[in-house]
Structures are given as structure tokens and as C-alpha cells.
Image (tube, rainbow, N blue to C red; front, side, top):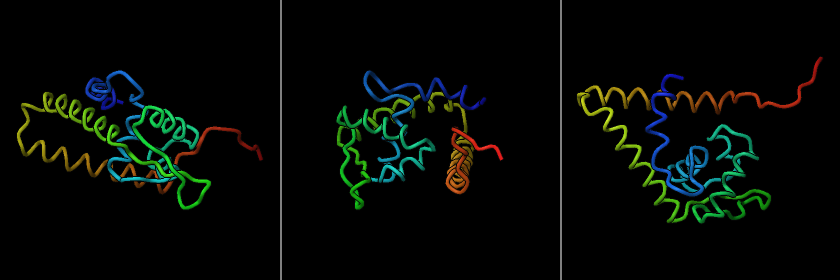
Amino acid sequence: MLVRRTLEEVWSSGYGAGPVDRYTYPVLALVDEHGPQGLGELTRRLGVSKPTASRHVAKLAAAGLVTTRPDRDPRAVLVELTAAGGAQVARVRDVRRAGLAAVLTGWSDGDGDTLATLLARLNADLDRRRIESPAPRSGPTLNA
């Protein structure tokens, strides 16, 4: 909670006007990082429900930031970043990096390297945990 509150000012910058916001930016960032991917894989990586991921993708597709096309299974779609989507990712990333650099300006190179190493480890462990044991989705439950 402390990290989220502390970084909110940095992470909420750079979106500009339009469909990219704190909810849709992760879609663009993941497709930029991992390349074209099916909606199911994207859903897993985001840690959201399929309808939520689908809404975000539809919003970004309507803005020309991603495209979708049938995947190997015609019932599934592959999400791809467009040039405009790649440019948007770069803009947001640059604004975020500048904000974070301003915060870390007094840190030594060693401290910055340590932080980067530990954050990479934390992110990898959190991703592995989410994939291995996804959080239960809210919804109806059966009482035994």
C-alpha cells in the first residue's frame, strides 16, 4: 500500500488525453514487452478476468493502438501493438522514468542498482505466484 501511494504521482503521469490510462496502459506495456499474444495469455499476465481484458483491448483497438486478429484457434484472438501503440508506450515510459529519476537523483549508483535488482526479483516472484496460484475470482460460491 505504501509503495502504491508513494508511486501514484509518478505512475499516473504521461497518459495524456485518450484511451490510455492506469488500466489500459498495462495492456500496451505487456504486448510491447512480450510481443503479440492471445487474449488468454494477456489475461493471465494482467491478473484480471477475461471480460475486463477484452474491454481494455477493445478500447485500445478502437483508438488504433492495438490490432486483433484470429489466433490459431478461430475462437481466440491475437493482440498486436500498432506503431501508434508503441509510440504511446514509449511516451508513458519516458514520463515515468523522468519522474522516478527525479526522485532517485540523490541515490548512489550502487543503491540504484540494488533497488533495480530487488524490484526485478520481486516482480518475477509476484508474476510466478500469480501464474502458479491465481487469486480466486469473485462470483457465486457453492455452500456445501
